[in-house]
Length: 492
Image (cartoon, rainbow, N blue to C red; front, side, top):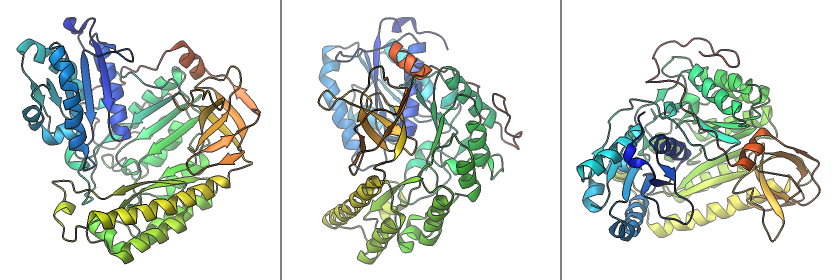
């Protein structure tokens, strides 16, 4: 990639909305801009380029985008050389409508052409007019692009992009496209590159990770990938998100249980506990299958923390349907849940369904669900009191609280733990401590540390350096039967 000479000395800031895939894309956007000659704007200063990486999943996404663009307009008026770029799912959906409604926007780019941003900024400056580029299909995996990672100790690694599901409430497949899988060797090479820089934890990322291998016609590809990733020397934690109950298979459970580096944490979206609602959602599974997966996970990994997503108020949801959802939540005993009030998204089948529920009905059910889940989460967390936990000390979350003198970290099961700080403990280090208190959404460990291990990731955080990967391959993955997953450090 060539450097934009006009970018020298110009600063940027990327604002991210939505899912982990957007967070991952934003790391690529930052890497691309830095490779082109831009530098990150210091906190508290105005940036020469502001990039909004948007989400289109929730109903208020449009209002949020145009509200933020409105807030940026005075800064743009005061500094005509400032540039504003809009990318992500909402850009893919609204396209030129964004420039029509906010003519002070300089660049609009879609989910399939993240790599075009520096050239579009340069073209907008040269032509003195807005540039809109929306590719209809993915040409280059985002993971082949340079990245500026936010964390010295943890990284996202994309294994696929897009989704082949047809859930009636979801607009993502229309905006991210059909699933495209990366080759196993490319994924493992990216993980190895991160580990070589001191990263201790990776999260394998996809819209539907356990459908990985559909292009290879290998149903066991994801379980194989978990095992191979877990064998990489120096990698201590492997997570993944998000799976889908319809494709979730027992070989994945076995791989999680038998691979020490794979964390006993599972995010398994439920969406509804009613078979009738699941049918209208076109989810492809029913209550019994879902609960069967939960039972098998807990049989193999009794310490597993299981989290979920639930949508309340889907069109046609009856009081009896909602009671079934509450019943499944009681049986599953999730460690935590992301709960959503159904929001109509234009272009989805659910938006045209009969039985759209009044907002007050949806709100009442939502409050009942969140109250139930908070009670369960608190009870599940109280069961952790007295347990020794290994924590990866977190930045942001890991900033010392001046009032309590605590730092924070994540246990292997994903729970957030606030613990008594000790001299020399840094984000990226690993400590062991004993849980002393519980709250619905976190744990507390007020006591002396049982151990503290300084790590290369902690050294990197202390030095202010972050992993920066240039990408490990070019172009799209090849379609066909893959070679077997290679030994650690190899390529498939």
